[in-house]
Image (tube, rainbow, N blue to C red):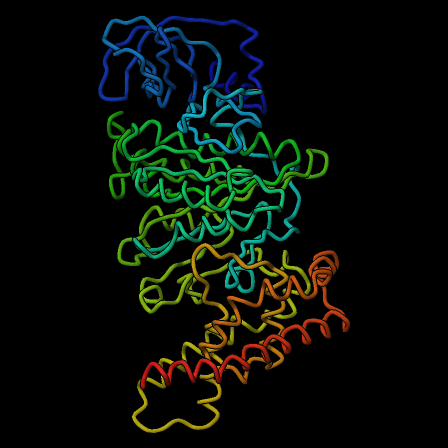
Length: 514
């Protein structure tokens, strides 16, 4: 009976089964950390709300014929054996609403930013069902990341699930925060879900968002390292529930989970406390289900269900670049692509340190603008060939041919174009201009340092000089001869300005040497 009711309870919005006012009572048998064992319940289901009195609440994580294990999520007073509990046919719900935008909240919906209480509009179950196949439609809209390497070679669509993998300190969080920065003015609600992060690391993210005005469209869901394993376990489900509120109202949502490794660790700790038999790497047997039921909640809804979308990018931390570890391989199999960040590339100064050979987007050019597709279709192969030529040239003892030198020079220009400093997302229209200029050989006269100068100063020049080109290209999403002519003129004119600076730069360096 309980399990049958559970399926009915997992619906969008407020739980309707609470109208039945069904109640039963149980008794606490034992308490171990944040896991409490209760007995004497006749009906129960996973995710069911359990009330211990005086504001103390928990959710059922597992049960057998004799007892149920409850995760304590709101512990106002200590729970002791013999305490009486109240169970209803009600799932544990996340309070949601428009007021969450611009706020920092914990997985229980409580504000952490000291800006006063929140006014919520409704409640959504933490473990809500993913949209059915017939409720979805194919991905067709570009999700602009603002990262040139991703938008050109590994494009993402709204409603896609993509994974970021990499060792410690390889820029995983930076990729996510740059994507959030790029959503400014694009009518996308962003949710940054920090799981098991230190407060010092989170304060940097908060400061970055404040400096760039991101809180106008961003929510931070925070379960720091100092929080309980229960809150760290609930954090990504809470972020999904908040995102679903906006998605089912026709909005586009981006959720960045940072990171799922800490989430898996929290669930492993809870499972061991519940005496679940450990499996590979001491993880419980349902670790795959833990993430898959969450990942499947990302979707592009059909027009009948408002046409909203929710895009997921979870992060997984690797150990010494080991892609074959348990949790990473699980997530690779359930996402629509992955971005592998290479520590060697990061140490060489190539940022973002995405290994193009090991990264893939399974949606790919299907969601790209026609203009982006046209100018970037050969970029991936050119870059891979350049890296291989560079590796071979380092091993050669003799001199290089003129053709090899020219290819290396062109490859270095391409690498300079793809290199991008943190916190500086690039508009998709500007990316099209850059790759078109590269394909037409307009950067041949420039040295690498001049290309870097061009990349930093060209976007504001282009927007000021020909602002209508941006709106035209955004509306058409394709290039005709007139647009190509205007792009060529813009790029050529600014290259002349860059070249005119060269003598002055040489004079200044000569004075410094003298």
